[in-house]
Image (cartoon, rainbow, N blue to C red; front, side, top):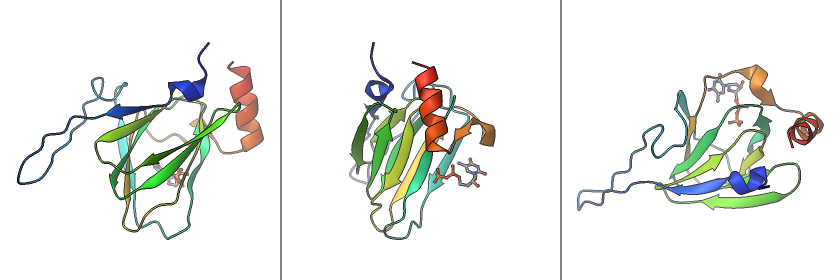
Length: 139
Ligand code: TYD
């Protein structure tokens, strides 16, 4: 059985090169493996700050470094893996029940996130032991 960490994967997004500048786009259900219902972005992150630090019960996300770079530490309760994002034409798919931390943001970096659902605080697992119990129960 593949672990939830194995389901986290980098998706190469379309790139339209042009002497005037490059263009990348995403369509829900096509480049993004779910129907997008929300996008949000994280910016103006002071040096050394960490975002995330939670998992979701049901929400799926794709994380894109629109500008600059940062690291995404992924943890499915069994193992951990850190992925560096530094290209705006790669998206990192993160399934439910994966604890994530976003760290080591470069100056002026922008993180865009495409999410499968509306904001719902009750879907968050913000307590690590509670996350471990939920992840274990879902094995
Ligand atoms: P949170 O998801 O905890 O931030 P991080 O990206 O670091 O994991 O969200 C921070 C705050 O913003 C929290 O009070 C909830 C609020 N929020 C919304 O109101 N709508 C949203 O779509 C998101 C992502 C967060």
